[in-house]
Length: 267
Ligand SMILES: [Zn+2]
Image 1 (cartoon, protein in one colour):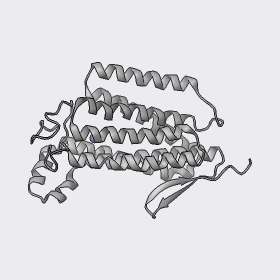
Image 2: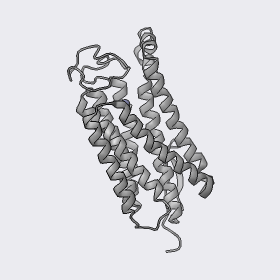
Image 3: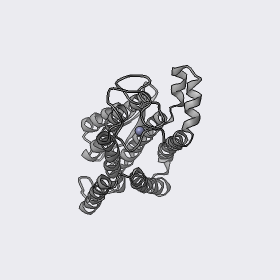
Image 4: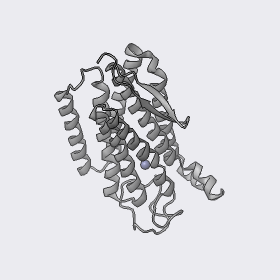
């Protein structure tokens, strides 16, 4: 992990338990890690659009929560990387757990009747969230948070593989794109942590804008933001397919994927 603040900045000394490889306050006096901050936009804006569309289409509220959960992580992460304050770190890390719990609920309940509610699973995930929060507030060990997050991601991967293997094989491209993009992001997160000294040396010798490309934690935001967004699309696609809404993935401006649905035919 990188050493503490390299230059003085608006938010003062970092109090977070993690300080990433990006050099602090080198681009802006007001933003500790500039690239790690602005790269969160991909996690903030598209899910807001997704949430609005979900409401407009009259789809289940759980998917509004799923989209907005991702937005909450993006905003928390923005605040964390901008300030490197411990409270803001929690605002990034805890919503990662909560939003992932929403994803788990959605994906494990996608073959249930409309308007069903699984109290058991809800209480289980709520208990998990409360436990993780309580323990993590006492025991400020980032690895604990990373392992708990990893467990939830593991549950999502297993369920996704089940769905595309046994139920809707034609959703494989969407599910596996989401997973691959996420995994490449995770690989870059490690590359950033492990080879931090190398990247810092490399950036010294490069023009600032080109050096920004080597901010692999920012790439982790972009790729896991996209991967998580695609996961919500996959989950919503599975759910609306089951509810006979005839979902389709469309690309806005030929680039950004969204789900379009029609009302069920048999109603
Ligand atoms: Zn981050």
